[in-house]
Length: 181
Length: 256
Image 1 (tube, chains in turn green, blue):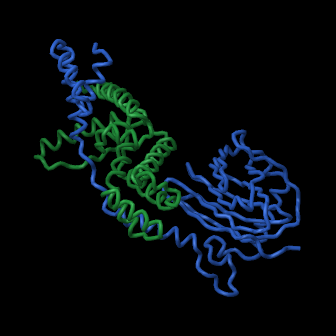
Image 2 (spheres, each protein chain N blue to C red; image 1 turned 180 degrees about the vertical axis):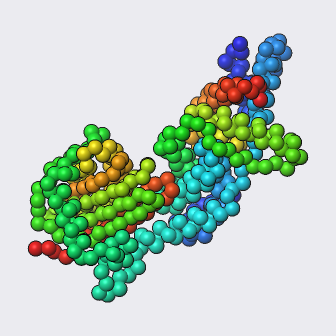
Image 3 (tube, each protein chain N blue to C red; image 1 turned 120 degrees about the vertical axis):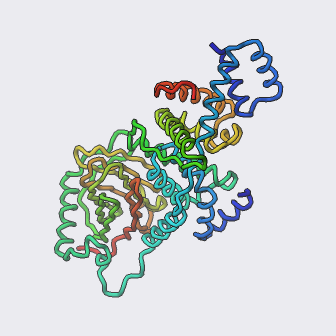
């Protein structure tokens, strides 16, 4: 979605056009859901949190500063929901992980699924701030500059956090008995 | 042991974010440092592993669920016109079965508890609300019940001599939060009183009181009218599973 498309939809939504807001859900639902899934680990919780984030965005739409990208604002709402959810639940154990299936053959698919699960379990054992940067970089595929904008921190900080998070992730994978992934 | 400088450079190169000069410097270092090449292989494996974890598909009903929730809240926030002669209580499920006597009893219980100091515990030190209460001529208003999951909030508003008291009875579930929205132009918060033992954490911002009722019980919010206009209060019961909300209009029937 282009920035202009986004602005047009947000404007319509601000005028009470629910379907325009629905188009924003269609446009960003996948990213927000994946963010939630990687942050909380459970598909059902991720679905609920995505829904809550979008509804909150709708309710607070009048406070959205149009000098910024809608997605950055929405992302921050969703991330806060995920962080609050984790705090409330005080979950320390990895939750059920349901990774999407792959198009490869059954054996390769199984191995990849195992690998995905190991990575997700290791991710869930990281601190939220480590998980956040890994999700943004490796799952949402954002550049350092985009991450910097999203997180409201300098690019230098993004690089530093990524470096730390990857080292910690490696540590978690080793703790699972996985040599270099 | 890889020097931190080169560890970071390796990661930036694998991220595709290293400049040409940085890549050249890294290549020169790697050419003479086998441990650096081994580390690069480890990091590459980690990146590959993360990259092989594909994005999940969006739940197919996300758009529908979001729009349904938005519409439900709109409906709840804009109650339909009240049929003439019908009790305002009648459209609220819990109170639909209560007789006027029961309503009076509820008002009495809330009023007695409030005025006898049963809600006398001051808020937690993290809040800046405080104050004392004195009996006053009061006007009784509507009652409101909100249900969210297994949590329930019953609210009752009384008003008199520039002071409004919102009695709240809560049956909470884990992590439920109560939000009370008021018009800061005509109303200010004097005190929030919570029952003994309720570990309520309170957040205040202009126009909004937000608190976690802990183990629940009876609470009372004391508000002061700072203008002649009388505005309704918006109440919401929020849990991770959703949000129930409603409006308490200013009392209209003087009780003398």
